[in-house]
Length: 168
Image (tube, rainbow, N blue to C red; front, side):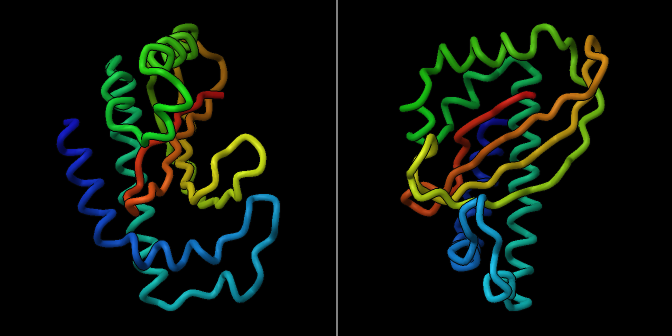
């Protein structure tokens, strides 16, 4: 499974990263509204971005699947070097287990969308292009559904890599 995630992510990223990077360079910081020019992409760019979003959403689904199987360590092993600077493998595994323990077993998981962000390095986030994939997930021991977010960063080698997981 790990090899398939890495291989499919690598293939996807090599194919679509140049078009997606060009499109993402026009994305503003999250607190700014995009201009009309930033929202206008060619049909080819939009198609490549849509394909990338579909593929990255599938990769995110595979990541939460690994987390469901208590394989958070494998997720961390394939993470961006930035993620590994932020949190150790053991701390990541403990945090995921701690956050999920009171919720019970995950059940219905609905995709909520893919969002692109660019940070300039001021604040909490390292500078770079990010993609968040959101899921609305029902858990067996929770009254309300929870939001899962899987975050990817475009590393210096133009490959999207896992950089974070949060549960709210």
